Image (cartoon, rainbow, N blue to C red; front, side):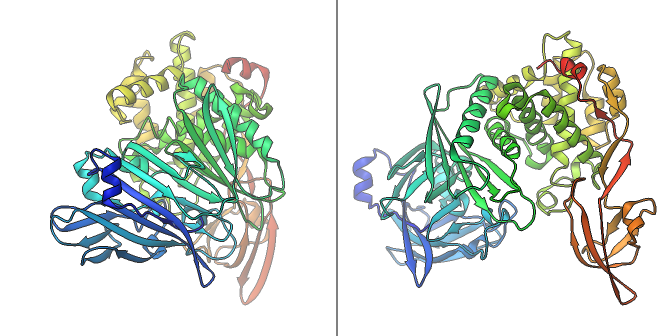
Amino acid sequence: MKQLIILFILPVFVLSCQKDTSNTINYTVSPITENGVHFLKIKMAFKADDNGATTLLFQDKAWGQDSLHNTISDIKVLSEKTQVMSNKDSGWYHITHPKNLNYIELEYRLKQDSQGDLTTWDTYRPIINSDYFHVFSHNLFMLPKHIIETSNDNFDVALNWKEFPKNYNIANSFGANEQSQIIKNTSEDKFHTAIFVGGDFRIHDIDIKEQKVAFAIRGDWEMFQDDAMVNILEKTVTAQRDFWQDHTQDYFAVTMIPTVQERGSSFQGSGLTNSFATNATNNRFLEIEGLVYLFNHELQHNWTGLIIQNDNEEEQYWFSEGFTDYYTIKNIAKGKIFNLDEHYFIDELNSYIKSLYTSPVREMPNSEMNYDNFWSGKEGIRKLPYRRGAILAFYLDQKIKQDSHGEFSLDNVLLDFKNDAITNDQKIKHPYFISTVNKYLKNDLKPFFDTHIEKGKLYNLEQVFTDFNFEYEPTSIVFDLGFTFSEDKKNIVSIDENSKAYEVGLRSGDRVISRSYYYDSTEHEAQFTVLRDGKEISVKYYPIKDAQIPQLKNNQHNIDLLGF
């Protein structure tokens, strides 16, 4: 993100351009640099609340981040005598002003508050520097609460990008390289779930069946050229829109920025309105196959997440994330994207199984999944709904095909969900999910669903694989540190005497001085230095064990059964 915009729109101008301006919010964004610090200046104009008190929504806590109000400075109203107050706990700014005031013109600055090299976690906060800006809209634009309410959450937005350098490319969820943008009939959720970038981005226009996709990428990447990503993205969008029978979206944006990581690599993405935003480690460890997964997963959220919505977000993460993960690897394999096929699907499904069955929270009831623990970073919780839901999707896909003698599959259920969401605004609720799936099954799904989703009990995979005639190995090599940390990860509180950790010399009660390991990876050595009886002890080992966790054989028999 670079600097802010100046929204300088007077009521006279607005009235001349709009028949009814009461539900229109005007923003102008401009770049500013002062004393070496880069800002975005936002100037907004909108009809005031008639009661003399206007509330502007701006979350202090969102998407795992807190203290977002710290990124706002120099907020002031440009007309009338007013007072502005911040309420971080409630996520708003409050303006008191004369009653029956016509328009409010407000100005504020947005700055980057993270320091040092850009990490994946930092990308959820505003990034504003001399080269570029990268901001999610809930961190950028304040929204007048009364306009949302009086418009029944259906308002217009006018965006103006002013005073940016000529070579400065701007792209967002609503368009690319447009100095003025009009966003009609949007809502708080749609407008506040968007990405806005500008600066030294390279914007690639991709036409897919006469619909436009804008790919905005920056940085000099070590492992690929832009055209490789453009090709993957084009195939991904085509395959998924074909699956969903939906080529109606006339604009879609994908952004990609590089992050820094000392060891290994990582990538991350966020599905958004008309778009998704991605970031990845720019080093020699980055694997293109992981980016293929990322693109497909985030684009899948255009349907399972944005069109097909959860009724209670965390309660249905097993669907919005788990089913998205399943259809990510299924569509990659079916579309042969990056030459990945059914062998890839089986390998990935096996990795999901191992991840779930070795998770420290593998049987956590679904009712305990909430915003705070999902974003806590605790090992296992973030991936639990992904894995639990993906395996349920695999089971239902096979069960529906079996019960219908191949006439139907889980694909039909997903398309039913999409149609119901569009025609009836239907959201994913557990009774609705079960009743829809039951249309394609011989027996009621509810007992199975209650056991494995609601209660969180592990699936009997031996029985599942046998029932569907899949061939499998009864055991697998899985990740296992071999011990349990204290809550602050400063001590080893218990250890498995049959583990690799015990074998190399770690013991219960050891004080952990340093640690380095890849969670859930069996291919990287774990390294620990502990303190015991005043002496430092350093060890390294592969954190693995042989476990009774079945794995699908990656053979032609199983590929034929999958029927891709």
